[in-house]
Image (cartoon, rainbow, N blue to C red):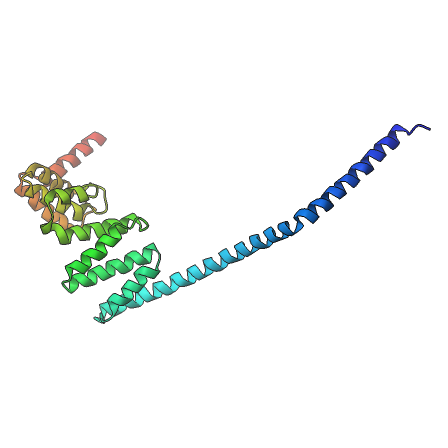
Length: 239
């Protein structure tokens, strides 16, 4: 007696289901332990990362407290042992605290007249690419200020020219040194242009702007008149 088509379809479905069960059973027997091990390792990795993150945050908080305590001691004149504590922080901390510790160490060395130690700390921060740009730029400016009379004017210009630009946060400090370096090279026009730009930049501290204005005037550039003319031209253009 022939099997009905519907019975054939039912038979094939049962065979297919049985084959799938056998494949799953075979796969589990062959790879089951590996799958379990992979899941366990994955969960362990997640737990390890969360623990590491927690420890990192806790350590950062401790380092911040240590640095704050150091600042307070230094301000109170308790500098004995401060250098060793700052060295330890700079070696154990992340980029931010490392830069802060090294810059504090450099400033402390400057107050003690130890330019060699100060330069070493400033250079370390300036060359550390993991440190944020503002920290590195500050360190480079401080380094150059200490070395200013010992290095060629061209070196000063090459180092600080990118920072001696209107709109740059370090324009005042870097601009003064770059302009003075131009004067050492007998290039008064280049120096006058920088001094004049500094005198007109309201973002620069008033003391630096005042010096820049005087220097620009001494070099034959009336920065005040230039600023007034520019403002007048702007007013006319808006009318």
